[in-house]
Length: 388
Ligand code: LMG
Ligand code: NDP
Ligand code: PMR
View 1 (cartoon, helix red, strand yellow):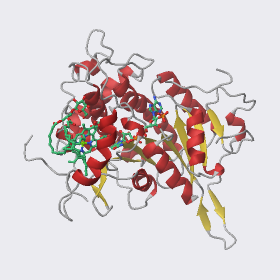
View 2: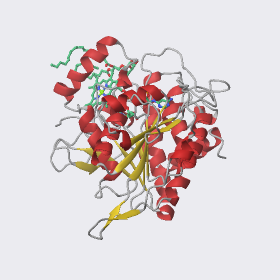
View 3: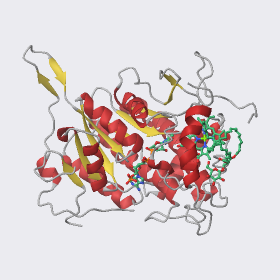
View 4: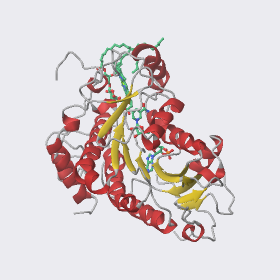
């Protein structure tokens, strides 16, 4: 544990490796997704590191005076979970390239993240890798402590990491005994976001944001959201019983385990959580809370567990048939916009992009926008992660 490299600021002198048809508006002006006519492992890396991160990181200046006497904004600090591949990596790269952000890549596989950043051509001084395994609440708490010890203000948090087990016959579990998909995608992020809200609050950055990545497949007001199995949280009886399968079910609605449904349910929780954050904290803190569907990034690691035939056909299917496909690069730019665009400061919004890649406020399904359900998911989640 003492040698666990959970935080390597890139300034440390250590070796580093380092449109559309379905799902998006059919008309130029439409502002809703396509509505179907059917109504209704931890890989902890040990590195010999003599230096603890907190000693090496300095708080950036709030502002610097330029020779002309104008004040420029300090670099923002953004934490992105799951930045070792796919959307998270592409967004990290896009933000790093602006020169305006220090990206904290919060990843379960430290070396993979370092290599990914390097392979993506991210400049050393633009990022920091910190260890975070969302499948362990202890790791989440440790990560929060490490962020605080690093002494940098936290300006934006992006909850991006996710796992998807579409072919699993049996559930797998997090260190705390929660079914893995909801445990990682929702509960790990729920604890992380609740804890780091305190840090966002104290940041002096002009636009502080907390972003939770959602998806079209959790929204049953779209065709994509109607591909079985459909998301449905039911009366939350499984969540209330702890998702452990002991004295209850591994599924939020109390049903039989289904990996694809568990993923979609977790995305509903992500979108509900964002809105509940908005209702509870936006006015008090000024933090912008937002979610998004970046498009179908059919080539990412998310589908690694799917059968090879699916992985072969899914990208051309999305490219040529649904036309919902976006590249990792394009999706990364979209997430980066939600992190930093001055025009996207509205809170409580679920962003999507039309066929011209213009952002718009999208409509969530009835379940994914149900305030009562959001409140209950929040309260039950608080209990499960030890906040209540
Ligand atoms: C569930 O199945 C699984 O049970 C579950 O385990 C989990 O994986 C879950 O969401 C994930 O999915 C869902 C089931 C829903 O899905 C299917 O995906 C079956 C697809 C069957 C289609 C087989 C046709 C194969 C033909 C190959 C054609 C190749 C085309 C490639 C593109 C080339 C472009 C030049 O199933 C349904 O609900 C069926 C709904 C039917 C909707 C019909 C829509 C018509 C669209 C036709 C497109 C066919 C292309 C299929 C590509 C497959 C990619 C998924
Ligand atoms: P990837 O699999 O490429 O990225 C997921 C990331 O999450 C990886 O970096 C992965 O780490 C990380 N991760 C997984 N488990 C954990 C864990 N226990 N602790 C910490 N990190 C973890 O998938 P995508 O880029 O596609 O997914 C990113 C987000 O986008 C997800 O929230 C997904 O739901 C969402 N999304 C994706 C869509 C798509 O079409 N791909 C569409 C809509 C939304 P590692 O590299 O170590 O595996
Ligand atoms: Mg879907 C109508 C357009 C559309 C869009 C935008 C998506 C996105 N999908 C669409 C349609 C269809 N899909 C249709 C008609 C089918 C039946 C052939 C279909 C099937 C399908 C499967 C089997 N689609 C899938 C799967 C998956 O396993 C993916 C999934 O559900 O992951 C949870 C998936 C997805 N389709 C999408 C998107 C964005 C995904 C994956 C990612 C996600 O939600 O994060």
